[in-house]
Image (tube, rainbow, N blue to C red):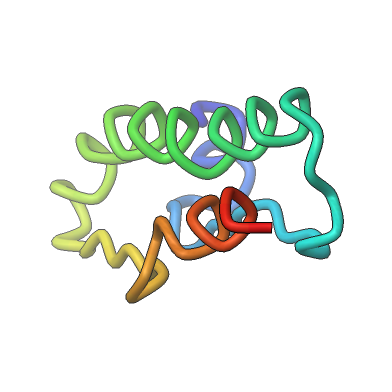
Length: 76
């Protein structure tokens, strides 16, 4: 985070991991959770002081049905 702020002067974007729903291993779900959930919390915590200085905002876009994939998989 600090290197990015030093190089670009601010934080203004981020992204998460996307992959086909065919990927069903437990390891993949662990990776997906780590990248898309845990990392989001960590990045928000790291970015917050920088965004306060620039009066920036944190916008999180999430699935309107976050449990659908797991629920659908459990029914197959």
